[in-house]
Length: 131
Image (cartoon, rainbow, N blue to C red):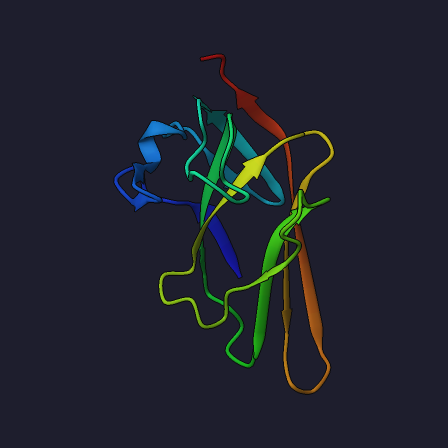
């Protein structure tokens, strides 16, 4: 599985990625670095992407070919838990960062034979820019 920042020109929840995430966001090994911009009101009127805060947009590629499940999410979660994306056609996501020092972006791939692979990406290298 490869995790990378979503393109700046991608429209997600009626917001360009560039409106909430700087072009310097990068994934190196298991650390995510770069700058997130404060978004007043959030990206959605309701749900986990609502309310003031910082948001991270990621793209997932190279999912294991025998994976029958691929769940992603922040641990600890602010309510959504791990979300299944195996059938998601674009394999991109937005997560609301509430505590970059304790939350970890986690990917769990599994197959129908009981094999499971977990990847964890640490967010402590993110900069949360003031509005």
